Image (cartoon, rainbow, N blue to C red; front, top):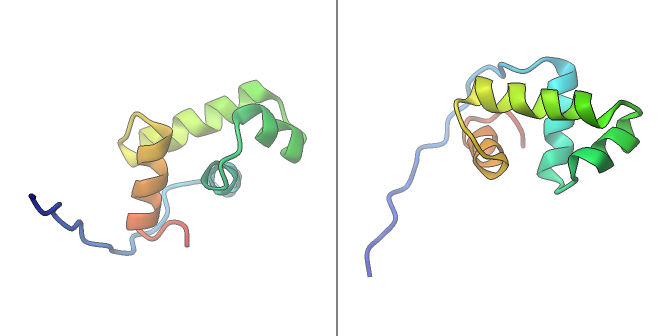
Length: 77
């Protein structure tokens, strides 16, 4: 069995706006874009744009990679 290399955890300043960070927190909780939209009282389209922008700022393509990167870099606890 091959060991999985450990990625270092480090704290870097969050690149996200407060609104993007709020959307990210709901993504971490497993909420869909439509659920987040309803919770936050904004459109699904706006939520999708926030998620897209967060992924771009984090340098990832998938929601799961966004969450993992955000935890690893200390952007969320």
